Length: 75
Ligand SMILES: Cc1cc2nc3c(=O)[nH]c(=O)nc-3n(C[C@H](O)[C@H](O)[C@H](O)COP(=O)(O)OP(=O)(O)OC[C@H]3O[C@@H](n4cnc5c(N)ncnc54)[C@H](O)[C@@H]3O)c2cc1C
Image 1 (cartoon, protein in one colour):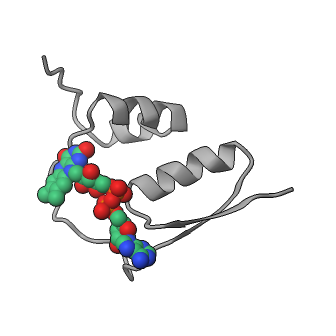
Image 2: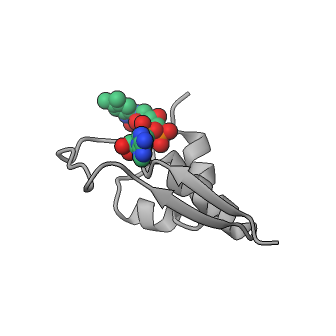
């Protein structure tokens, strides 16, 4: 039986969850109430270790690194 899942919110958590569930064979629909991408003015975003690990598992880390500066090690 194909399980269908509806995820509300297409910021960070929604698409990451959708990716993981789709890889596991679920049928996923993501809905978002915002009418368009929010433009934030190119401010910096920190990707902490869990986000880096998840990005690597999703296969998008090389693309992120190609668009960012060198990784900084904290601690
Ligand atoms: C100024 C600022 C700077 C930050 N900088 C960083 C950083 O550098 N690094 C970092 O890791 N974190 C940062 N954070 C934290 C990060 O933004 C949050 O942890 C992250 O956005 C949480 O993602 P989320 O998808 O769970 O929720 P949200 O980003 O809050 O997304 C929820 C989404 O659901 C949508 N939604 C809500 N209700 C509905 C509905 N009824 N139907 C459909 N869609 C709906 C909203 O429009 C939104 O798009 C920052 C936060 C702020 C405020």
